[in-house]
Length: 253
Image 1: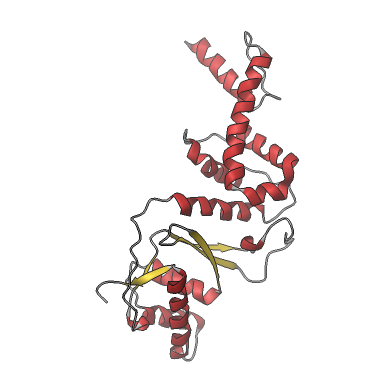
Image 2 (image 1 turned 30 degrees about the horizontal axis):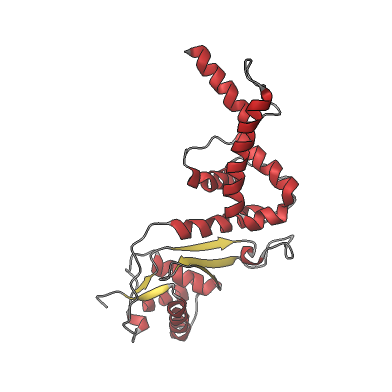
């Protein structure tokens, strides 16, 4: 039994890294090559679908090198095909040594991965709230059930083959990602104040009214006239509701 397990380990090591890991005796290299290609192609199909911009920017040669390093070096925690992108992001964040010269690549890959997560996360069907919000300042906004507030040092939503920044932006990039009532994933770029407002309202379990959240932001900014920010807050939340990130107000408001 121990000998069999040893052969299994050697066989799997060869599948993951056929260049450096020798094939156990008794196997025909040409036959095993079919399984090597099958393993690579399954991973490649999953990851190019999830990370199309990353793939396009790297190009075929650099992408193959990255993918082969991932297969050879990373020990996946999940056997499920759907979770290959999750394992890939974990590899990039914890084990990957970046030789690409593209400082934004990790953030770009994470941004693309979040799009997948937003698309597949289980949630109750969204029922449109037809009730108008007459007093934003006194209410507790209800956000789309699948939503993430993202922060990056690079403008990842604009990066493509034609735009590749060499240095971080002067200000952080804040992006609100969510799945709307039509199950469409959307991303909205936010200014810092709006990002902070969403952060407070979304992450405090409806304990803050809009007025209280804006007053907290005013205190953080040491703004001399908190009431001057109320107009900004109302306009911001109205816009987010029109775009589908906010569904309405809590029922007990």
